[in-house]
Length: 145
Image 1 (cartoon, one colour):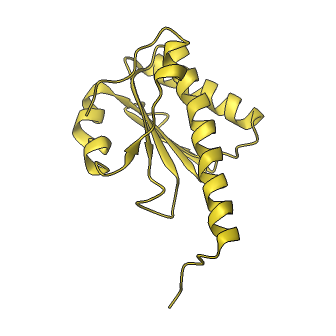
Image 2 (cartoon, rainbow, N blue to C red):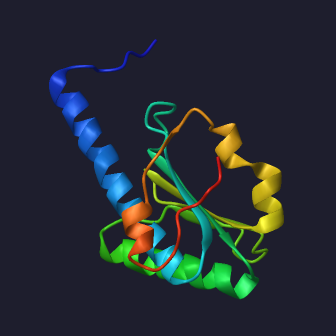
Image 3 (cartoon, rainbow, N blue to C red):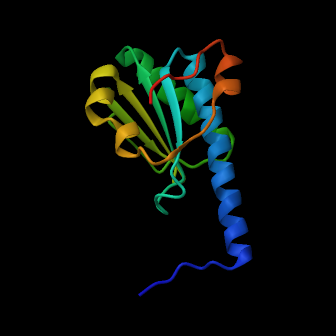
């Protein structure tokens, strides 16, 4: 039986790790917006699971666009020191999932985003405010609930 270490130092380190993940995810959100990604949502899942910190969810309108978003996010996050663990779905380009450990980036076409409804599945997660990040690119925050 394992126990969660709740000493103040561990909790502070965990909070910093989550904050770092969210900051990197905001960079990824900006890149997605600059590449015309739509309905960009960042969910803080740190209170729901210990497996990862957050999901960035983005809709693209074409295979080419989804590839461009995936490649640019990967390039920028690599420069920030994030290590990609895996990328799946790239060839099919209906749902590309990029795993950076603390951050999972989900790039969907419209049909698959509606079908899998990650926002609904993780409905109790806190939505991270992306208004400042997206407005700087000319994009609008998602109106998805």
